[in-house]
Image 1 (cartoon, helix red, strand yellow):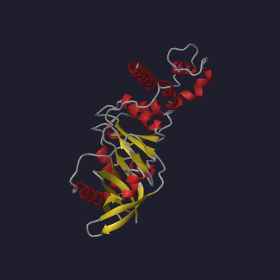
Image 2 (spheres, rainbow, N blue to C red):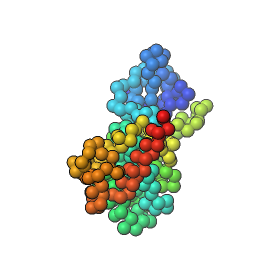
Image 3 (cartoon, rainbow, N blue to C red):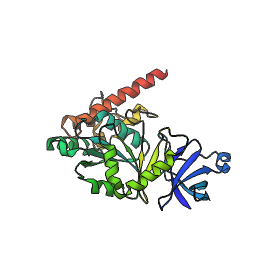
Image 4 (cartoon, one colour):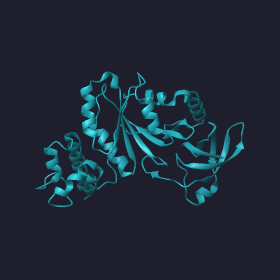
Amino acid sequence: MQGKIVKGIAGFYYVHVPDGVVYECKAKGIFRKEKVRPLVGDDVDIEITHAGDCEGNIMRILPRRSELIRPAVANIDQALLIFAMAKPEPNFNLLDRFLVMMRRQGLDCILCFNKQDIAEQAKREQIARIYENSGCRVLFVSAARQEGIDILSETLRSKTTAVAGPSGVGKSSLVNCLQGDKQMETGAISEKIARGKHTTRHTELIAVSGDTYIMDTPGFSSLSLFDIQKEELRGFYTEFEPYEAGCRFMPCAHIHEPVCGVREALREGLISQVRYDNYVAFYEELKEKEKRKY
């Protein structure tokens, strides 16, 4: 039987199969011998050992489409970052930090702003302007009023999506909206997982439908920019690309250099000041990090 690992705790792997059942599995010794560790998100073949207790063994890990480092997870197709339009106000520094981290790992990002029902239209227009050239799809929704949920669901359909965002933005409410009739099944899955001896919070997948999963990503309330050189940073800002031909010197950091096409575009209002200010802050952070190494 084939399924997907939705959680791994202390050597046990919880595998969700198409009919909605979750099997508690151990990995065969051959994986240790080959130094291969199953990851949350892996598609696997399992052998059922005790059908009544929903127990089995992982026999084979299917080829991975992708593999993230932090968190360690396989086969993520995209990232969904959820912020509120108001209460709390969006933290654009954290948002841009997340975008850099996800793009560093090769993922496309969707920006989802919840609570549009309590925000002014001007706020929506401001956010849209900031991220219109960022290369991300931007969605505005309201979990409270069930607005925009159909579009969001369609965006996630048949994909495995990493979901993150700060507390208080309505992530849980949106997840409940996305699950719809699947909430009862997901509750049963959570109960099965919680019955184990180890209930420490780990990365896990939530089955929204047969082939649609969302990944709860703990620990993303603050992020450090890892494994990035300051010279690489500009490559994660797609809105810079059209104007880099106007830079006299390449590579150009787009901060102090004379004749910089990016800073000229900034002066003309073609690049978001918010996005640029975060870029400069991240650049200085990485510069200081490099100094501390020596």
